[in-house]
Length: 162
Length: 162
Length: 162
Image 1 (cartoon, each protein chain N blue to C red):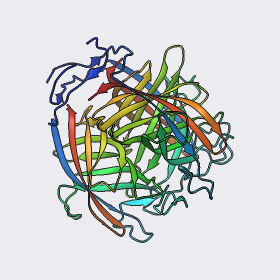
Image 2: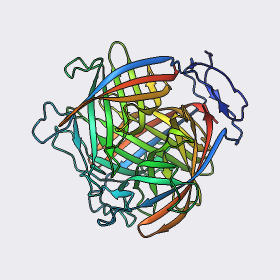
Image 3: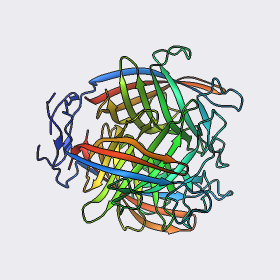
Image 4: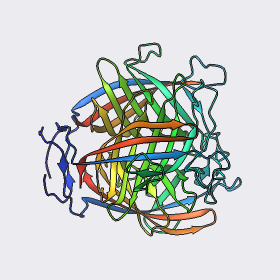
């Protein structure tokens, strides 16, 4: 136990753990049941031309490289939705679910995905199992976006580790 | 203030606070307004046979035992949605709202609910009031699931406490 | 590194950082595209008379005073939904996105908005950029609510600061 007023914690930018994974999202188009990993659950509104309000639920494979067909090392399960009327911009909340010989547990992540920026930081707000009580930053970088498929590099840097 | 690079915090598995509560969820079927505690806000998609994309908003009573009719000691307010095409699996984000003589305040929780597992860990990512700045783990265990009703045991273990 | 069982952290109520900002939300009515900052993405259910289940996606300006027309210093991007059948009550999850000369980065926030209370506390669960790894409390206070417009004062107190 410690009695403190509040914490100014001057972290150096050296994480105690780093994982780089690639998310692959294939949106359901009504017929691609075998390949689809996500589906639209609300329609875009008419507020602008950038899908404002369209929400997607996903269960996406995470791989160690950019190849969609590489063996998944985790699943990303959650939602995103588009939320700007003037550009393509999204908001994510999801869990990374690990169930491999290397890791068992989850990381819980939320934040804004400002797709106009080359890199965007979201917050790792908690973890379980092998990631018990973890916190950190998830940096998104779009690798591919073509039609019903996109791939995002997620650089996961943990600054509080079990 | 402290100058550190990042934190490896070797918590023992002894929480500073533990609460065991039971959530009771009765889904609205169009007529059970008096009893219903939750309602579907999006339809399931046709991606698989496990309600992929169906989202439910809830305001569920939390009791100290498994009896739905026991006096509530908190409310669980938030959402869950189904997110797998091959099995029944959900994702939760919600607040536990306490307003009793014992506790006033909230705990904020998010994470994956992998219902095929007997126990699943979600993250307690923050708290307010009597749970000011709390963090921890919420372990789910399904007690009952029959038709429009389910009951989940939530074992709340806090590892950062006020 | 430190070996501890769990943390009882007796914060004094003195934040290491405080920001007071005002959120302005103008709901899309089908025609006010220029002014609208949010849009309904699901319909209210018939569970009670308080919009249970109605979800809104928003990209709202945040200003330093109560004037909707003041220059925004941040955007609030996320969702809220109504979740009680007996009163008007909501749940929020969103990011504050700063991109000014003063601050660059985000704060990620979630929690219950019990509108019957004059002040309600939500959790700041993470931050990025100038708010790297921040945690704290966001206190809501309704300033105005008239038709399609509302204004909420957000008193952001950080107790873990970079």
